[in-house]
Image (cartoon, rainbow, N blue to C red; front, side, top):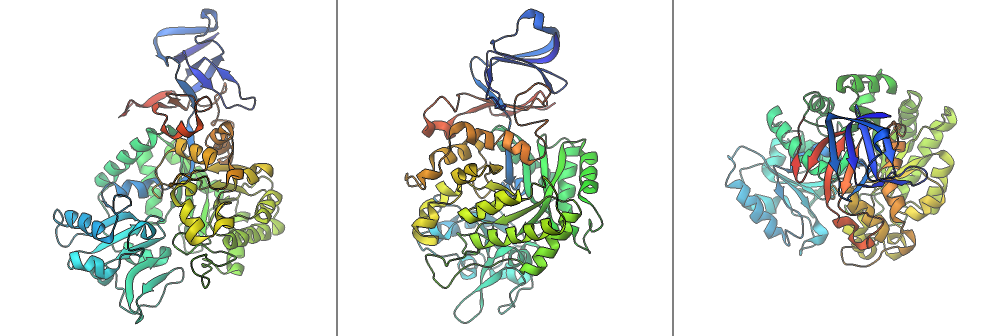
Amino acid sequence: MVHADLLITNANVLTLDEKGQRAGSVAVENGRIVGIWPGTRPEKDNITISSSTQVIDLKGATLIPGFIDTHNHLPMYAQTKGQVNCSSPLNQTISDIKKNISKKLEQTPETEWILGYGYDDTLLEEKRHPTREDLDAIAPNHPVCIKHISAHLAVANSKALQLAGVDDYQPDPAIGYFGRDDSGRINGVLYEFDAIESVYSKIPDKSVDEQTALLKAAIKDYLAQGITMNTDAGVGLDKGINDLEFHLKAIEKHANPLRMQLMVMHDLMRPNGPFAEYTASELNEEIQNRTNGMASLDSAKMFQDGSIQGLTGALRKPYECDATLHGDLCHDQEAFNEEIYDLHKRGFRIAIHGNGDRAIGSILDAFEYALKRSPRKDHRHRIEHVQTATLEDLDRMERLGVAGSFFINHVYFWGERHEKVFLGHERAKRISPLADAIERNLLFTLHSDCPVTPISPLFSVWAAVNRLTREGNVLGADQRIDVETALRSMTIYGAKLNFDKQHTGSIEIGKKADFAVLQKDPTKINQIEIKDIPVLMTIIDGNVVYEKGVLVSH
């Protein structure tokens, strides 16, 4: 006999447990699952219901574990809520971008910054980046900066460069570089984070109230997609330790109901950083204590290359569009090895951004160096995006026990251009090689990298199952995976990657009551329709936090 404060009945329950069992009803008490029954309602002698028990009749809708997105940028996405949308197909030309910025200018005092997001040079008719001159033409007095869709590039106008102290012939930073015209003068295009940071560091902070309001709007979008656990893949990228404080305070003030995994930027753990003397367990304990267990340390985060569509991903063979370009590694290998070894021996799990195969190889070299010097079982070090991993790279990941979080949405949003512009056919058809990863029994997940692509686990599942490009062609048919495995990659595999399998990721007795309710069963419909299934409800800790387009507060 179980007691329940929540009873879900008349459901099509996909437990996604090891046996792939299905059920019809689920009971919850104190935020934990206490009963699962095959029938649409438990028999009366199996459960005690009181007047305070909430009963939810799903009327045949599908109950699944809450989605786990293991790599995105929630605060960065929140900031876009107040920025100019420079993305395509909304903007077909640079003139379109300028018109949209001009509308914002009309509402903005002259001294205030204008920020935009999402432009994609390869989708604009001009097939080039906007420049400082383009932005100066409409905004000679306002500082303006717009980010590329990859988030690895940006464009600043002359006023923004002036306020940032970047002169016309400024030397390139340690990581990344400044775009230049034929005379060597900086043209406003900023490649990679050090160059971007030279400008973005001068943008005034929003007030706490403004930031919180934007965050709440972003969180609503996440909950509307059935996400219950989420990983911020770059805490410290924008404002250093203040990024971490913002996360912790948002949870403390009940502005964020999501379970959060935090990838903390590695420089915060360096000798002069605020966590220089911390072990991983010490930092994790501090985060968990501040948030009553709603946030945890995921890893120390590093980058070893940039973006393939920005031509900064590090490849072994040159880019298809330019035989002189291979992309660049962010760190010298010897220094990279030593920093990873230091983090590893302090107990940190390490997550490293690697798009190009040369970067992936470099990351594996560094992991192997650390593991040889200080063996550690079940470290679950991970590579982020794993976009162009070769079979040899995947073999090494298997041998070293390295997990992968695949940016599968690339297939749809950039697949055709990877094939025709950046990588050529042979490399493009193998981006995000999920079938090869499964063959090697790698632990892997899928992710959106929001705001680089929209937040939607069902879209990522759809992309993994169908591998359709934006133009409607199949790219790499032999790398498609089945629906249930794709669902697992955004639920139970995510829980395992987060060292949380005992608590989340499947519907089993004793686990946390984190659920998403879908109007249709992804395993029973035409696979092409998966991305369009409506999410009816999101439940965290047995509490309904989202229903029918509305956030539900407690």
